[in-house]
Length: 322
Image 1 (cartoon, helix red, strand yellow):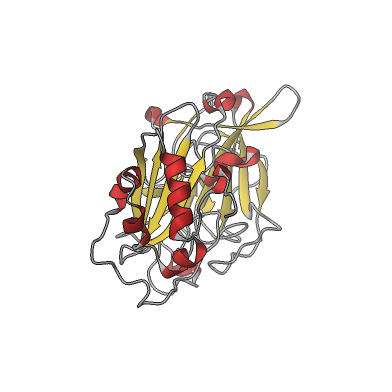
Image 2 (spheres, rainbow, N blue to C red; image 1 turned 90 degrees about the vertical axis):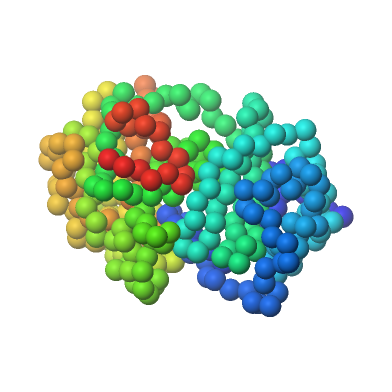
């Protein structure tokens, strides 16, 4: 058998509408093959089942595509090695667009995580176990500027946190502590035709300045994507960059085409309208991308964790309330 490393042990993220700066995947699979087994393991009990060594029970709950991707023998061998001697705590659990997303992590210096996606029939549509990289040299470098959320009302945190299962941005220097926010109602980010931007609750919603400052860059005029498609050539899409004190900047991306109402050189107050949420750039559906950088002594920009008003720290699965 080919040895599988711990860097990426098991992964099959299929049939899932992924929200944010990611790809949209289509729902599919054979209904007969994906029907729910007689005994169903609840999502939050999956790690306990792995620790108990009941891999065949879990495997029976795999979708047909998952079973094609990994054999029971390989799954059991990989899983046993990964969880041996570990204790995992639930980090995030939420439902979005017909799927349940569940993440666990251990609390050791050498971080490990388990991420599962389940469909509406309780089939396991994705399962990933992974050694989690950490960046302690920057994890505590919170912004001196205190920011408010860049929107009105309640928005859903689809990506946010300090590991790659909570925040896929985390493994990339240029976006490490970024957030992706979407609007959700009754567990869905859209209503109607998923291929229309207008179907998404976030689309054309106001995007606000997260703190006072001066606008130092504006990009507008980039077309909004058809949901599920990505513009990797212009990853930020329509965007606004605001200079704050202490050498810090906020970057807000993926605005709706021609919606931005500020210009370079404008002074803005916290809460002032910048434009409206769109689906431009490296974006699969309408959402707000928000991150903060700090200029270093060598002139480079370091992405840093965001200090929010009231000391709040949002992670994936939270409802962020201004």
